Picture 1: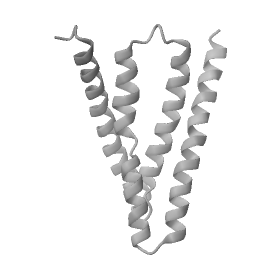
Picture 2: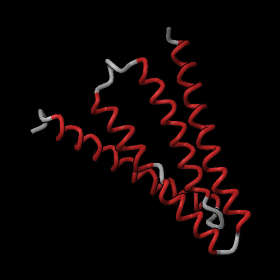
Picture 3: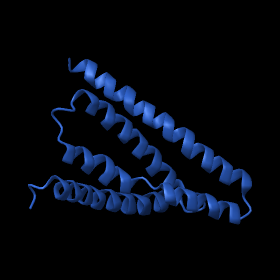
Picture 4: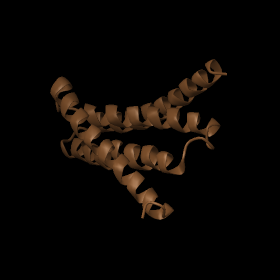
Length: 136
């Protein structure tokens, strides 16, 4: 059964998704406890850290495409990071802030998520390139 690439891919994505969802849930609880719930810090931190890991992993992956299996790539990117990052929750949090009449705070959150997400993705790329250079 696991010889079939379609089934293997589905299993890899599912296993990664379990880890990503649980990480998101428990880190979200921890960040809410640590930082409060007046602002969606947990979603923001999880999204930007997920962007960092995606940048790091995919950049490291470029040089190692032949050594990292498709199943592993799917497990990490589509499975784990796909369920760890929370774009739909980010949109829900933005809508809640807007409904609370907090236009400035909702725009700040919306903008920070997008900009910091891209910055962290690029930091992940830079870190990966640094590690590649050091290991050569």
